[in-house]
Length: 288
Image (tube, rainbow, N blue to C red; front, side, top):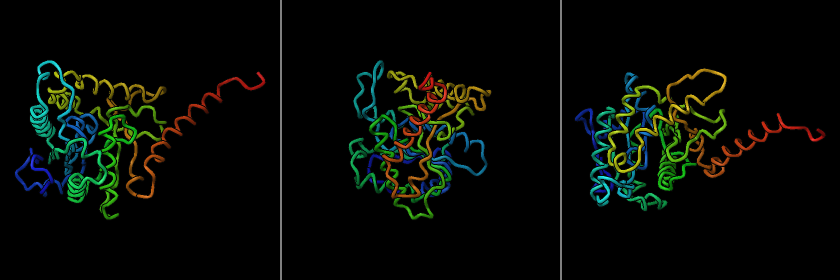
């Protein structure tokens, strides 16, 4: 597999087959911005592949992750040192999670934020063109992290460029930097992240440069999953031990004419209408 950058990384933790062959058998693909994003947003896909015969998980990290916050033991590490550490941490996570393939494209965030950047475009075209996943996990367009949104947009461009018959059947935008609990229930896609809880925590702990560096994802992510499962519904017991919320992005891929901003703001419009309707339903009448 030929990627655009000399410092990109292709890792096959489960086999010594050619990278193209490993990618071709991927059934669940997550394309994320940074190291550890995959493990935060797509644990349900990892679990699906561990539990299901004939399924294979593939991970893609688009940026190099050099600009991450750091403190403690990592306070004085340079960006180059952090890049090397984070790359190895992602490899270890892929090995633990038994991914079929782990690709790290190593693009600077500035390149990903540039529409039409040739290296980013060619890499994503090669990846999406080299597999036929049942499910693709992306960042969601309402995320508050600029690089996450940029990665989502570059992925959407690449998916829309595929022949219609080669586009994935399901594309989901997952929460990382902004929960998706605010969506109305009928819009939510519940990803079952309560399976393999010990593995989920160990996957997050692989990224010690983040945890010891000042970001306790190992505590926050399982807590968020449990909170979502508990507060999912007020009149029934919990169906799952953990939930990651996602929005369905499949219509954006299926119809390139759909405007991304209008589609995303539709979720907010439906929330606004839901809040207003409940207040009107139980509020005082005009003549009271």
